[in-house]
Amino acid sequence: MAAIKLKETPEPRTRTARSVTAPGTVRCDIQLDNHSIVIDEPEERGGKDAAAAPLLHFSAALASCQTVQVIKVAEAMRLKFGEIKIDATVDIGGGEGREKDSQIIRFIGAKMIISIETNEPETKLERLKQLSIDRCPIGALLDDGGVEPEVEWHVLPMPA
Image (cartoon, rainbow, N blue to C red; front, side):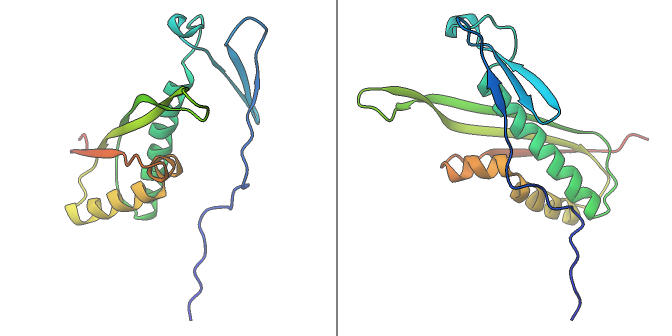
């Protein structure tokens, strides 16, 4: 019987982010391994709008996670492709919080518009679409929460 070898190196099972906030502000200076980012809220939510808000970072996480998965699957399938562009939108609404009579922002919808430059046949593209959507853990997190992202694909010809 043939053995199947994983092409990817197993990753650590945990991810840790450290957030530090100065008194009197909602700005968060975040440390992520060897990286740092800043998160802030817009003025109407108590911030100074010095950086993108947490929910916008969630949209960015969805877009970038899906981009990585499309690339990994396309490379594994040996597809020839050019630019990949993903616009991810997360819709929010109000919902009940954990405490009586409290409200919390809840995700109520998500949409990704995925554009890829390729001249590959439709049969291969259908497989790419299925496999890459199934592999994105951020999309799976939304699915698990009852919000299945709507996905729209645009296949564009490769530039000459």
